[in-house]
Image (cartoon, rainbow, N blue to C red; front, side):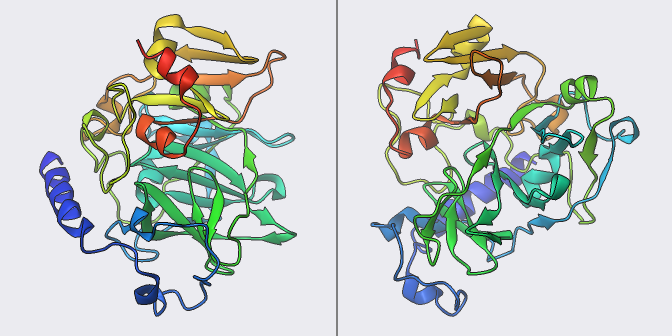
Length: 325
C-alpha cells in the first residue's frame, strides 16, 4: 500500500500543473453546468483529482444492518454518527466513505448527504433539501484547495464540501444546512447504541478497511494543494476541531480531556484510529474521538479537519494559533 501511495503522490503531482481548471474545456463533460454563475475568482484553485465525474462512485439508498450483526469492522475504526429524533442512530463507517466519499441517505424520510473528504479529513452531514427540492450528490473528480468538489445531479452545480456551499452553477452561493454529526470509534458507537444501525458493506470491488493514503496525515503538505499554508509553523495536516469560525487543535484537547470556552464544551476520549495512517485502518495510531456540545449538553455542528483546510477557509485563526503550543 505504501508503494501505491507513492505512485499516487507522484502521478498526482505531475498532473497538477496540467489539469488546472478551465471552464471552457469542461463544458462538454458538464453541459448542464452554468459556468457563468460562480463565486470562484481564481480558477487555478480548482484542479482535477484524477478520477473523472463519478469516477469515485457516490452511494445512494444504502442498506443497513443491526449493530449486533456487524462483525467486519475493527472496534477502533472511525464511523460518522448521525442521530435523528425518532430514528435509530446510524453509523456510516469511514472504511466505506474513503472509497465513495458521499452517501445519499434518508433516515426517517430526512434526505441527507453524508460526506467525507480524505484529503481534508472533513466529515460532514448535510440536509439535501434546497428550496423545496431534494438534491442527489455525486463526486465531481475536482478539488478546490485539496477539498472535494461535489455536484448535484439535478442541475450539475458544483459544491464545496468543507462548507457545503454552491460555488459554480445554478446553486452558486446557496448553503446546505449542516446537521450535527460526529466521528467516533465503532466500539464507542456500538456500546452506546446496541439497538442502532450500521451501513452495510457496499456491493463494489473495493479494499474496504484498507487506507489508500498511507501515512498521509504525517505528510508535510497536502496533495494537489497550491494555496497558503498555516502561519507560525503550524503543521498543515494537524487535526483541528472547527466550530463556526474558531478552531482548537486536537493535541490540546487530548492533553486537557475537556475544554470549556466560548460557550462550547469539547471533550476528547482515546480509542479512535486514524483513517489516514497505516494501510489497515484498524492498526492506525490513536487520534481520539471528540464531542462538541453547548452548556446544556446539546450536540453542536462542527468538523474535525486538517489545519491547512481550516486556514484556507479564511476563518479567524486567533483562538487556534494562541493554543497551539
